[in-house]
Length: 86
Image 1 (cartoon, rainbow, N blue to C red):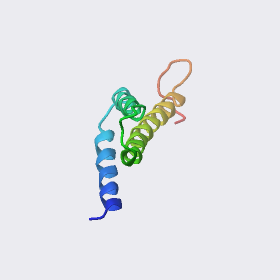
Image 2: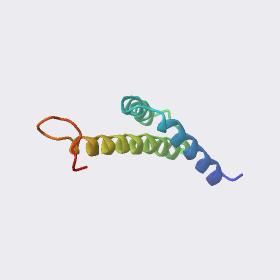
Image 3: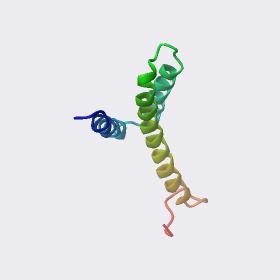
Image 4: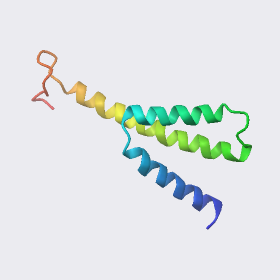
């Protein structure tokens, strides 16, 4: 297995792991990765892996926010119940 296949497998695993997290948990994981990226001790060879791992959590957070936004938009503004129009 070459490095790119290995990285693709890791990304799939990260996506699977992230899919089970709440918004708050994914945001916390993203914060931890960001802290690691700010550490001067992170080897240059690991930077891409950290960035890609962070992107997985960011994508998950954005997906959760979009889903929530769509649910809120469908609420009746007077009753805050799901709208019949949706």
